[in-house]
Amino acid sequence: MWIYEKKLQYPAKVGRANVKMAKYLITQYGGPDGELSAALRYLTQRYTMPTPQAKGILTDIGTEELAHLEIIATLVYKLMDGASVEELKQVDLGGYYADHDKAVYYVNGSGVPWTATYIMAKGDPVADLHEDMAAEEKARATYDWLIDLSDDPDLNDTLKFLREREIVHFQRFGETLQIVQEYLDTKKYF
Amino acid sequence: MFAANERMRLARAYVPFQIFSKRLDPMEGLMKGTIFPELYFPYRRHKR
Amino acid sequence: MNREQLNMLKELMAVQFTVLELHLYLDTHPTDQKALMEYNSMVHQLEVLKQQYQQRYGPLTWGEPSAYPWQWINEPWPWEICYE
Image 1 (cartoon, each protein chain N blue to C red):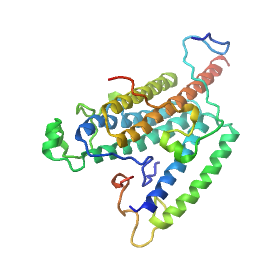
Image 2 (image 1 turned 120 degrees about the vertical axis):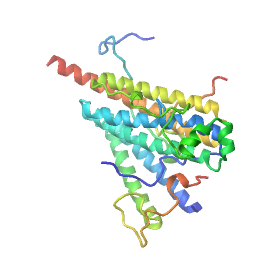
Image 3 (image 1 turned 90 degrees about the vertical axis):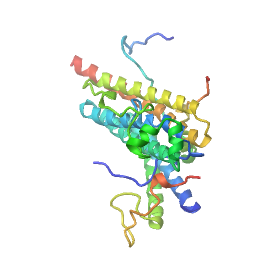
Image 4 (image 1 turned 90 degrees about the horizontal axis):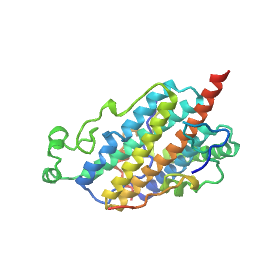
């Protein structure tokens, strides 16, 4: 089961409302390498992991990704706060407004809704852990590009936190991969 | 580039294990996104 | 949210983050005794901070006591806080 904590993982700030950045950033909410994809990917892959370390790390990182999802939603919410219909139209968010007003919805940076095809659960633990390491690198790259796009130091502060988490997660998945490979080796030869 | 040692085999990826030695203070760790100095690889603006 | 509450909340975030980092590390290093000792000591610190915070400002999570009226729904919610 899961229990909600009424706090963010990180004190997420924005310097000013900025609908253009909201439009870019929302890809980390509902895009292919976003936090929803990450959470759902890890939390469903854990059932077919062979070692206790792998079951643990996928459960715990999957759960942390839900906390990151909440941080992204908070940033998008703050970036859109107080925006007029005219401002939304100017950055081509008129279509978004028609469907969602200023609700935070699971779409990528081009407005395409989230799809389960963004994630995979292959059942082969080595293949799945490679996907997870690739996913962390892709998310890290996305944060790099988002920071390139942004000139708001407060927003970038939170994006840098999330970017660094991808690096730590990559390391943990890499360690898990070694453990799983060694486990599978011993199983094969005895 | 490095040669494989006897415990490694081809067609397999390896990530070295982290060995915990020291950690940052909680607030510094939170601000950096990790408490482990050896895992801190911050963003650098490299293009555009 | 006043300055005092915000500072307590940030301290809580920082200590909880340290616990999380050690937790993930221990998932792949379950026999690292030094990390485990560090983890247990930080968990204790976190527990103290949580109790202090909740006594003053109400429950942070499910299953915690509340003063009257029901404090769980008190604003601001996490996304509404200005973390200056």
